[in-house]
Length: 230
Image 1 (tube, rainbow, N blue to C red):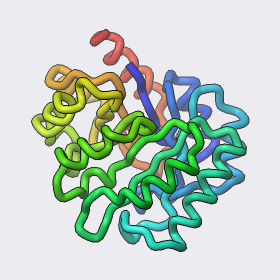
Image 2 (cartoon, rainbow, N blue to C red):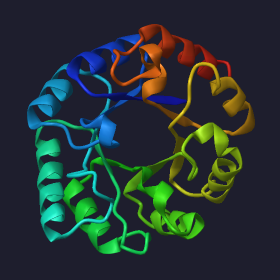
Image 3 (cartoon, helix red, strand yellow):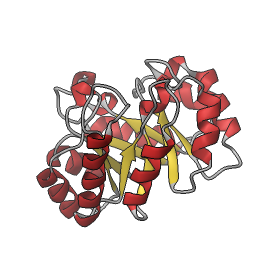
Image 4 (cartoon, rainbow, N blue to C red):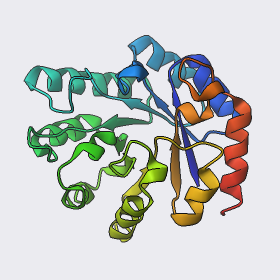
């Protein structure tokens, strides 16, 4: 079972790794939902961390709909991430009618050139989650979908997550729940859904806030909970 932790700094990444995280999602602008971090941060984290580092590729927080200039920027960011040693990227792109944007997604995947790919929580804004899941399952390059089940907090979306897991069961794609999970509600959530990857952000920080540092004890507690389900 994989524990992914959001890092917004080199210190975050080091603390998460030492406490037992299996993978880092590296972002900046977390107050805006996560944006692409600086090249300097990507290089530092990838150079000093031994666990996989997946980098957010998101040029702005206006929406998940991108124009040609945005896509050029995203392609360049992906190319740089590969050069700097990132293990993967975190991407997502929608059309104006909240469907998966095939054209943009194809360009980003082509640029990834073998990097691990997560489709991020743009998925939570799609008009038709089941149809969108079917589309994403057709992309062999995409490893997982990060989702809160279309709700603000994933513990409120147990039925939705269960449905996505069931429908993707025979595919290569993992459903990775994230948003709103804490050491206090993880056990109950995992009692209800069968997951192999889980994503934590504010839930591993002091006072459950991104304005605070990572609390290593919370990561260690999560690892114990996860171990009890293996």
